[in-house]
Amino acid sequence: MSEKPVIEFRNVTVEFGGKSVLDDIDFTLHNGEFCYLIGSTGTGKSSLLKLIYRDLLPNYGEVIVAEHAVPRLRDKEVPHLRRRLGIVFQDFQLLPDRNVYENVAFALEVTGNKRSFIKQRVLECLSMVGLSHKHSNMPKDLSGGEQQRVVIARSLANEPRIMLADEPTGNLDPDASRTIMDLLEQINNRGMAILMVTHNYDLVRSYPHRTIKLVDGKIKEVNPALLA
Image (tube, rainbow, N blue to C red; front, side, top):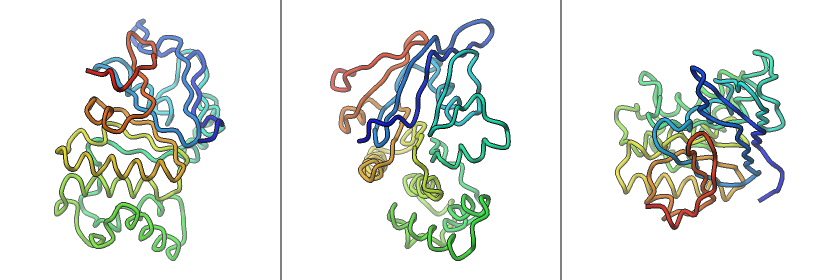
């Protein structure tokens, strides 16, 4: 793991209705690091992720992502930032009228890649998640775990530096959850930084990594082995 940070929060505050959701927080994610973000509902986890992909701006402080000073980006520069991020949501958000291949290809089509490159890259990404044989299937024909693997393949398509995983196992049974965690571990072992939001402390204990918790607008480091 490199000591070079890929995400930095410096004295970041986010306020809604005069109340601080994030209160003067500092946080660094290094290149190649795997970090869990935990905390009760409403503690600001989603706000923290939105700051990273610039769906939210801080009231105070600095957010730096892959060398981009996020709050100072012009609107036309935001898509370039987001191509450095692979984003995995709990609810899949696959296009229901497109098959597996087309869902992954969409991420490359919107960035203007050539058709020959798209085909090669889509097949590479599907192979990474073990779904090459499902390339013609529609999302409705896949299990929840398979759908999430398609989402991960799509998130990898543009070769991002950082993966943001927002409750990626939240809708999955325990076996599928472990499959997804094994896959995320493999991706991380190839050098990608991962920041994962989760409420599943069993997974955190089973796949231990650095763990940070949001409490009363502040970030604190916790020992995953001691989570109850």
